[in-house]
Image 1: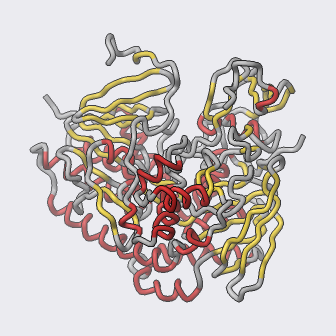
Image 2: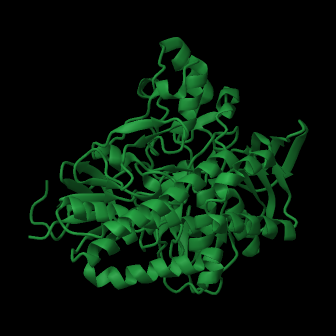
Image 3: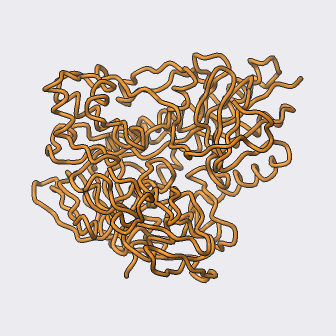
Length: 104
Length: 462
């Protein structure tokens, strides 16, 4: 699985594991959740309106395009949330358990 | 008892406002959405990151360091509330939320330094994963050490277009092209006004040199046609019409878009400030006098959140608004200093108007958007949907068109679609942009967590 974001600086940081759609991935200390997800894969979520995958837009907490669901059914804004060890994120509507990601 | 003054925002305007209040002997509250101070322009990287000020901020390194040092020195003398959103304002009190804790804070004076976000014009395909705002592309690099893709196109217009492109080049990222909708002739026409701040003009020329040395293709006078991509994999390229009419395709996996900036005015709106349509800017702005006083007693507006004039102007406007607040609550402050700040701000106002001439907002693109273009990224609502409510339902006013089409009702609350949406309505209804009006601000200004608990410092909550 290749990522969308490319790390061009601050590369020597300690890494830790998070879980994306049930699979393990590596994040680095200081990563926002958005960066942790997008350095491992191309997108953050499915659009609820059928226009495809989304990967955020403003990266500064204004556009609200990067809200993702945790496996526990909490919603977090990926660009303003720090990635933390053991976080489990669901980025695909089809893979979410019933009750985690509301269907429209 | 000393007056309670609250400053919203810890960017250039907010920090300098707080500093002036502290110098006058007050202990202001500074509320900021960011985890660290600096705002967007001087955003601080996370603890433990090692890049130098020169690497992070380039020509602005000295200013960034000065602002951060000033804030560090203020810390023991202010009540700093980071990572916290102000989501509503009522007379003499505001409501905040941090994580899932809410709080109500009373104030005698409030200085709103809410900053700006990118002004966007839709283009077919801008909903694909991999399309970002120019500001967003910059934040990814500055704050997280990441490029938004392995081959990045920068498209739109404005100083940020060249600044972000140059920063990407310097960081070793690949910039496939810079596609500017404005022309060289427009830049020449703006020269007399841009000379109001010669140092800023020189910096602009230096950015162009960085791009030239790195052999980044720069095309001016282009018209965006399409961001090509697929729903599953996102952006694959960009198609534009060049100034001579020829089509140009550039392959890429990310696009950064933006047409200069727009102020974040929702909080001023909730505070009851009156707005006026600015003909030169073609934007609705909260009314404020030269010192930043709004029409509501005790509410002051400063920095790019009131009027986009850039970070250097914001530092001065923040300080000037604080001086105005001090004067209004009966404290003495130096009128000489206020006069000096007003004169300096005049030059920045002239420079900002030069930037508008050099990098104009391409209003005409809105009328030409194909019907199937998504205007509202939040809910995938198209230009055709919006035009239908104008034609079939007679909705020629922004709030009415929003009620029928939902454009502006999504999660971003119109931040990224309202400007272009209003242009689409104006063109379709054949009315001036001013007649379309503006979307009213609504609380909460951003989504709130579903479960809120009172802040631990409060025994009761409202």
